[in-house]
Image (tube, rainbow, N blue to C red; front, side, top):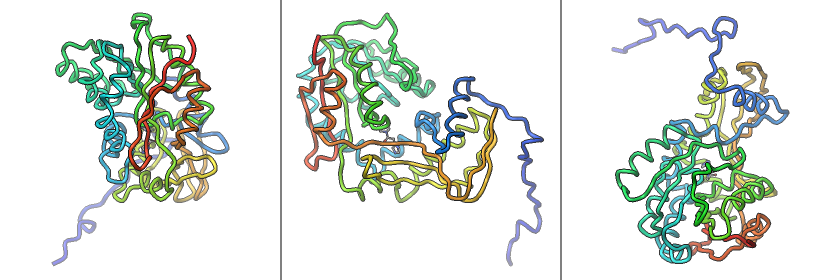
Length: 334
Ligand code: AVJ
């Protein structure tokens, strides 16, 4: 006997017509304006910060567990092997400012070596960050933990209550790769202005390698990265009241050799149109939204980038294959 559900049950598609269902946007006006401007540009694009709603943050955690996604594992191995050396260079008792802290796990694993007196995790995913901070307070009662919910694509302005002396900025995971080299210098100059003469920056950077390794890292076999990219559409629906249908889009990721970066896009599977609060756009089949850049550097290239931003590199640690590097940099001048 064959069971046929469709024979017995009539499935009624929900009404999605823009005329009948008013849109609700949960983002503020500036957020909606930014999303709208990106979607309306000739080459549509969105900021990678919109990946990180709660589900997106969890999906990124899952990416870090993937066999193809080597950066997290490789960087962790560098910290495990050379963390004591890094700590010796920095010295204990600093204010550790963790830029894009996420679940705070990387910094926390270094607490025993670095021995910060205060830990300031900074991230855009507020709820996720507060939860991580609450757990950390229980594990490390001696460290003052003061989370900051901030958008790192905006000017880096730290609260005046933050101690000015001995500030160590921590920017692991090659998050710097999301910026173009030009914007990376602008961002690092701001970090430099906040570091002071006696502070520093410990930063992770992903290095240029075989494009096949890079492509696989951003297009994994079981589709976690695809889900991470696609989740952006859900988040845009929430923030801008958009009506993206994820089923109409596909994940595209590739290494752009000329720009030395991985690019992620969402590509329309068919001709379609999207509406959101204050805008709409049609996409032809194959048309893309550029959702992320992840720049890959050479050691020399990244050193000169730090130099341009006013930093002098005083330590470089890599893995044997030279897939990833951690650099420590101090102010190049007072
Ligand atoms: C968090 C920006 C470092 O570029 O590798 C991972 C984000 N995107 N897989 C990266 C990401 C797709 C990640 N960063």
